[in-house]
Length: 468
Image (cartoon, rainbow, N blue to C red; front, side, top):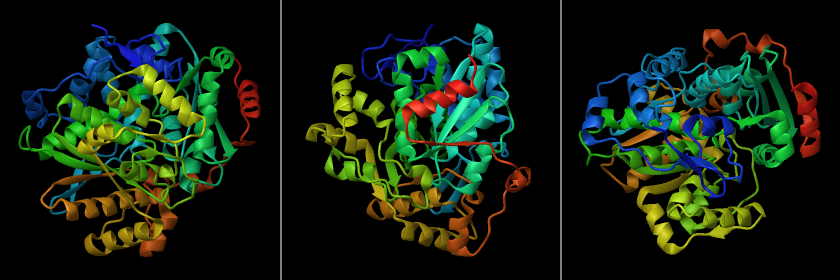
């Protein structure tokens, strides 16, 4: 039975899972979400406590897929997606301190949590494009980790070209090299003179240009792609059912986030019935989500480079999906709000809606000095190196636990410390080692094109390098 997906702005046709995955962004500018949230029973959750990651992924994701992929093929795709991870549990839990665990999401091929979703998405695209005998141009923006994970997942695919925009000089060297040293002919990197929001805005404009979208057969792999969010739901389910003793024993999650995609996956897990408690957004100095949770007003600030660059974002695109539910799935109301915001204006939620939001969400902030202090403290206390994004989460989790003693918390550890060597060395004096399989990166030649923040020039470059 088809699982229908609808746009948050109400003006696009509903699509099945595979069509929504290939489309990425809806034609009305909205984001796809399932028409209904599937449910996990208390018995399901109890059974999943003893299942492997792949088995849990199959149970969680099958209702979204809606039978569009044969069960045998789907299991094979999941095994392939997660067979390249360095840890057999894919996303293992480790205890940092009493009542506080880390969910290690950096055991994939590019050492960041984006691998969990993009290895899955790569399998989905390969399967469906081969079946349709269709070719697409994948265009994405990255604040550091998405690009590398997407390139690893799609490099060499016969039916897809991939173009990744990153903000020039605003990601770590390892993040950049993981993208620009790819040798596959279908990989194209653009270093944009601007910040991540500029990259993301150009991607949205390209999708909004109907002629360009159709000519180039555009498809999206950013977290605006629903299939990515769906894949991330799985690790909230695996972690919460392992730590919980039953449906009423919920686990809180602290999520380093900028674009709201990762934390929205936690919301979906909770909506499905997993024992997920409050979701706490951990922000850096670019604290739009923290400010919003406190004021009720979504208002852009000025982008400031930080030690946690993957969170240097002032437009949290995936918040639109939560807004859709807060507005009782009124797509017209969401469209008006987002058009107002896109025009450069802030928007403020009704106090009753903010009360609903705060029932399940909270937020904290961590500046660069606190980030370095947390990295140093965790290493001194536990002999453990963490990256700056994880440090933002740990700092916020500790603040949260002081206010809510007795609550058990899982902080999402989103990247390997070696991806952010400079910050880790500055904090601890210890150089984190890259896995052996990535130690060749500094010696490899890079392939990229530097372009200004100009839609016409970016589109002209894409047309020039990709022949359709």
